[in-house]
Image (tube, rainbow, N blue to C red; front, side, top):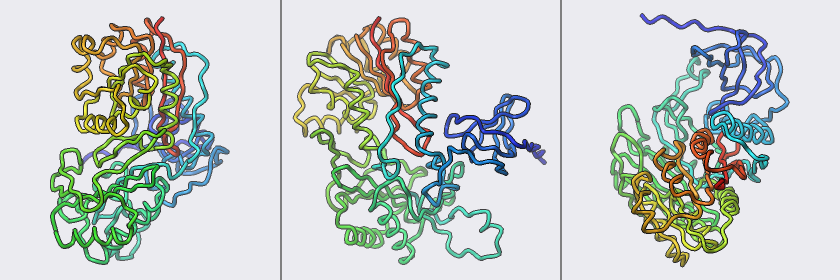
Length: 469
């Protein structure tokens, strides 16, 4: 029999900081760090430890002696159980301060970088209902609260339609109202759930890999268009048609209604054939008169309003005069490339996802932009001597890599061609700092600007301008 790990209790501990991945930070009497999930900096609490590591503890506050003045009342009834918006209990001005501090600390501590005066973080005007894409999961094994488990009440209906509980791949938190996406998102989700229950449609069982209703994605755009994509585990023609027709009749404003029959073990869409049921197979996003076609598999920043602010900062940092050759690395569907194209001589975009490059090329045609080119492939393979010979050395490089940052070979090649300016957009300032450290002998940091794309969460973007020394 495995030995149960001993839990420790620490009393009257002050929570002193916000750390990585949305956790808060306290210190044990022996000086070791304690990472917490249910507190706000400034709280004074008793802590029960869970995992114990050599250098730190993980714990939970079990008693509050004093509540922090940084606290605020969460807007969402699901806050304590849903892991999506872990900072809802912290006032927004303090969320911004901790995000800005994290970015600055990472650049200094990890990159050992010399920073100019840091531009204050750009916050969101809308701190709720800002997402343009949400994905919800069906399950016939709804997550139960401790009160429900301990009660004598018999629970007949275990169907749920909402979000995965953190760390429990097979348990779904049933959602009544989510504060992340504007209506009619909540109305659509609640209608679909009620229809499924009324018509005895089978909600998915992830352990047995059985059922009918699996997931639903809602995409919206700033132009008011709506896309719905269902994943159904198996084909049930009559049930499918009745459900989709009922949804289309109830919400005639839906622009695109699509579905996929996905019976494989995971629910990723990217290797699936998506079938159009009604409307068109895409919606449009718009920015400064530019139109961007968004399909079920397209990548687009999930906060449309703040994406515009992010791209304006990126364009401003690039300092284009109309003649430059610009490389746009990790271009996605080419949004940044097209956004800066009017101020550039030509823009060359590279992206690893072929479908994204198809969208980028189509978007350029829609927008009558003729000075952009797009290439699909792994950045470390595409960005080589032949690429540079064909397109010429870049005057400016804009790079917006995924969370892992840039491959070291890409950084080395950038240093080899030595563009005058580099604008590095990052969703992970830790890997950004690592990459910038490799370039600090050749480049100086001129500007750095954090941008909050995801209020109520710990996530933050950062834009850095580098100039050749």
